[in-house]
Amino acid sequence: MSKKKVLITRRWPDVVEAKLKALYDVTLNETDMPMTGAAMRQALMDYDAVCPTVSDKVDAAVLEVTEPRAKILASYGVGYSHIDTDAAKKAGIMVSNTPEVLSECTADLAITLMLMAARRAGEGEREVRAHKWTGWRPTHMIGTKVSGGVFGVLGFGRIGREAAKRAHFGFGMKIIYFDPFPVKPELAAELGAEKRDTIEDVLREADVVSLHMPGGKDNYHLINDARLALMKPTAILVNTARGEVVDAKALVRALKAGTIVGAGLDVFEGEPNIDEDLYSVENAVLLPHLGSATASTREAMGWRVLNNLEAFFDGRTPPDRVA
Ligand code: DGY
Image (cartoon, protein in one colour):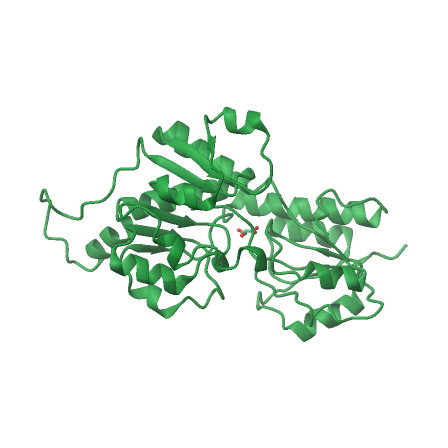
């Protein structure tokens, strides 16, 4: 029997690509250049499975296909707001993602950002590298103590809970959270986490607010001028979720005005094109979407896609089917 034709849109870890080659008639992306929408639409007609990732825009225009050969978009990444799932459904294409395996590393990065913003690590490093450090003094680059503070989680799913676990057990922080969906009481209880009824309640009370909700239109600019104004002037905002959840212009205003003391951002609306004003805001830590970027996690994400493909080609429901 001839091998199934599979396309992956970007470079993946070597070991995963080697396995894909062994199992399928796979087309890799050796140059690692993003694919155009037109090329992706064509791929849906030419391949049995297409494997995009979080930086590919698989919108309604790409999915404007009739009788595509591909009946699955086996995406590499947990977030899937880059795929128009309604359009995929209309085209008869199912969608899967790669949950769980990246929760710990993404949570680690949320804590990295919290600490970098609180302790002004980015600013400090820039000062040293610029040969501008003039030595220790009692008033030099004073930051914010996070230990013992209140860690507010918006979106108490797997990644949010992992971040809360680190904040609670590592830094003795009290955990409060808001999630629009029910959370199993035992998952909150193990962290002593207290539910709040609204996003606003969390924003008013937290010393650090960490965002962990999905992107897409439902949470577009959820953090805006009005909500930032509710935060403490000593508070820090951390975003490892999706860029569009935060109105970057409002955040720049809040950071410049001292409405909040700092922010740590791993994701940006329209990334890699970052809102120009953010570059000059010293109290914003900016990282290039590194949440899941560890060798073992990126491999695990690949294995997760392979499981989904295997199930799909066996005629079973992919374990991580999301649409
Ligand atoms: C995801 O998988 O959605 C992450 O943003 C990639 O790190």
